[in-house]
Length: 240
Image 1 (cartoon, rainbow, N blue to C red):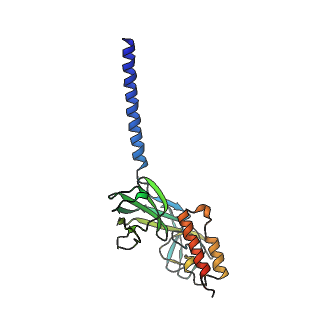
Image 2 (image 1 turned 180 degrees about the vertical axis):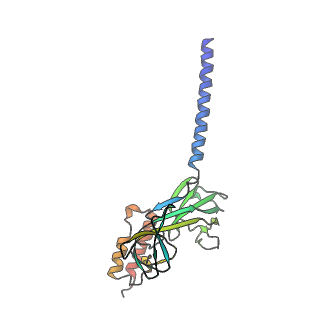
Image 3 (image 1 turned 45 degrees about the horizontal axis):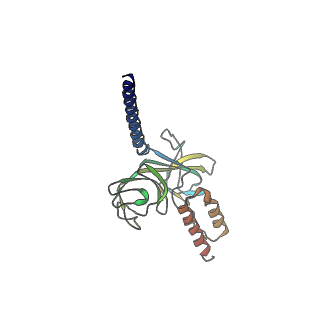
């Protein structure tokens, strides 16, 4: 009798622990799949192909702040024509783009009806995205059609249904040596090394490209391939 009672108690305890483990596992899975907490911050961000921190020219009236964070206070003004040196940048995603999947995307394990979240753009159609509870950094987003119908280069397996809210803050140093933060919104010229006005085959341009180009160890294979292709094209350009 005692043995039977002990066996029943052991069975009950085993079932109870199994149910608790199952509930804990389900809760963990749900938590892992939750959307990233906002805002999403990307430090040292220069979010487009050819973007570089160097001397820039101010093109529109801009405000300098003590920090990029919400606690910032105004510290000065920039006027068109002012020269500044870009030091670093911070990309802030306050709300990501929401993208509806229309066709299966095997690489992302995404099926029609799923929603992909897009965060910082990194250039040439690549961006940081969140799909099925997983980050995919510097991912080729050429399968996505924008709300205006542009963007999709192949497949068109997904479409943007809601544009997000994003900010790019840059830290600059003025010609007088003052340092501050400004919100970048097409108010600086000279950010794009690939849009430089001096010949791309000049020693100055190639040196700046070499300084800008990240090392392969810090790049994904896809991004490294893009940079390698860019350098091959530069090498083929005629001398001026």
